[in-house]
Structure formats: structure tokens, C-alpha cells
Length: 419
Image (cartoon, rainbow, N blue to C red; front, side):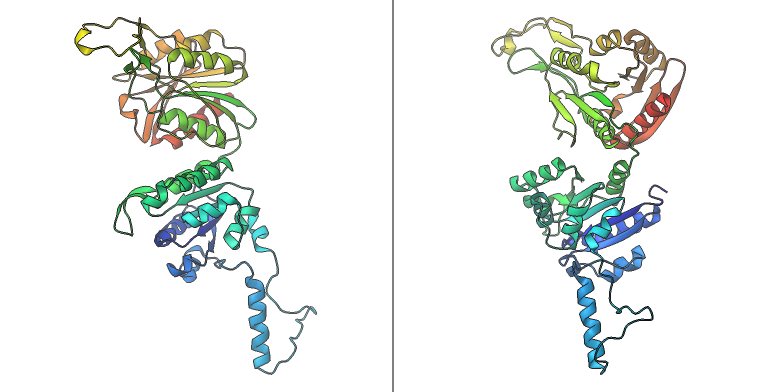
């Protein structure tokens, strides 16, 4: 079970999606986690504490100062029964609820998930406000934090919301983007709470061992563009998702990650130094600048293979173009292989149609890489990936997973080889 011997705090806020947190709680228990649920006041308008207590097997935590509330309640009961002063227990102490500071006591858990996280919670967390048990626990918590927003689509795309979410990422919190679909207000759009599967997969990555701590890893991602004129360019369909996932996975395992990215629509992973480039030449220059620092270079980018021999200064009329002369672009992986120092490892990617082990091994030798990840065009722009990690004398098939899970599987293999 993925979360055996892990204590997980589950914060639930006042959203119609709060009922989905019951299933998330059930899945966490099924995967071996010890779950403690913190309900905001708003959440109790949508779900009952008893439901979470039944599923989690633990008392639900609700109020910041519940111990004092309970104590006063007990005092009133005794007074109403003519008891006067409360009697000490057998050890000479007054009977009262535990006075521990809850938010500090809870901070020893392995991870904190807030799902659903309303716009209000996201704003308070971004601003560092702490006015209830959940937000004070968040302030005192030093472990991994996973925030899963759920709200109306107009609220989610608002610039203030984007600023707040970005601030959470800058603080080191992981954010699971909501799904698109039917919303409670009757609209369709981006704002539905992410599925339990997505949230648990992200949690699994956050709880990874810190086996890359203090190691510098250089990753390239995305396509490059080679311009024909100021408007048109030669490129490919790479989305950059695989390289970004590798950078995020490595950072979650303690590595210092430098990501060199071609043009993509992706947000850079939190905690990763990201350098943006456009052309293959720019990518090579950036790799040359940072290569010496890295113990591991993973070349997951898909640089354009060809560039025009000349770039027109103005937009070319299509009626005047009969042919375009091209030349090979700089070979980033080959340069790295030639300049590799003792102790450095280089991993390349080989996309073949169809995938061919013999071609992958030819590339492995030609580029002087330590391993090559052989994959096919079905991985391009997909949310999932599969492939074969090819070493000089062996290979291993890596099963189809989400790209973030696949990135961890790849890193597992590399760490194991280097152990």
C-alpha cells in the first residue's frame, strides 16, 4: 500500500465539492494511511463530521479552541447537577479536555492535503493568515502540503486567483489543477475538484525519499523553433510535459534542478530554476553554461532537427517560395557526450517510428550517453508515457503511467544503477 505507516492530515473547506473528500479519505485509508480530518466551519454546511469520523476512524478536528469549549460545557453540566466545584480525578488533577495546542501537535504528520480548497482558503494561505484550526495548522506545518482548488470557473481564472496560486507554489506547496466539466452553478468550465486518483498520485510524489538531495540535475524540455522569417518556423509537436515532469520529480526528491525549456504552455515546476530558450543553438549554449555543475543531464527536449540556411528579414510571400534550403541544427546531446567528465551521467531520449532497440543502441553509442529512453509518437503531448530504458548491455521496459509517475520510475532506475 502506497501510504502505509503515513499520517495524513486532510483539510476540507466549504465547497460543494466537500462531499468528494469523503471518497478521498476512503482511498487514503485503503492505501494504508492514518487520516486525520480538519473541517472548516464552512465545510460543515456540506458534510457532517460524523461521516468523516466513520470513514477515517479518527475524531474529526473542527475548532481551534475546542478544548476550552468542552471544558466549559463540562463545568456547566456539573453545576446543573448540583456538583458545585469539579472534583479532581484519582491522580489529583482536574478532569478537563486535553489543552495541547492542536495546530502544533498536528504538525508532525507526514503530509497535509487541502481538498477541496476554496478561493477563500487559497487567498488566506497565500497571505499567511491563520484564523482557524486549518490555517493555523498550515502555518505550523513543515512537511509536504498539497492544495486541490475547487471553485467556479470564472473565479478560478481570475488574475487574483492565479496570483494566489502562484504564491502558494513559491512557498513550496504543490497544487493540483482542477478538472474541467459541469460545475455546481450550472456552467461548464475549469473548476471541478481533481479526481482522487490525481490527488493521490501527486501525494505519492511528494512523499518520495530524498535520494537526490544536494545533487544538481540538468534537464531539457520541449521543442525548439528555427525561424524561416519573423513569423514562420520549423518545429515539432513536443509539449514539454515529460521534461517538466522529470524536473518536478527530481526536485521533489531533493535535487537542485536546472530546467532549460523550449517554448511550451506549461508553468515551471515550483523550486526549479527554469531558463527559457527558443532555438536549438540557444538551448546548446544554455546547456554548455550549466553542464559542469550537473551530476546528471537528462536530455528530454525535442530540438528541431533542421534550420533554414537563411532567415528572411520580412515575412516571405508564399507565392514566391518554391523551396526552402535547410541545414542540421546543433547536436546538444552529442556535445554533452563529448564533454562528459568522470562521474557525470547523460540520459538521452530516442523517439522512433516504430520504436527500434537497434536504433536506440546506435544513438546510445553515437552520442556517448549512459542510457537512452526509447519511446514512440504516442507519448507526444499525452498525459501518460511508456518506454524502454536502454543501457549498453541491457534494457528495461517502463510501464505506462502518468508522466509524473513515469518520471519517478525513470529516476528510480537511475538511482538504483548509481547506488
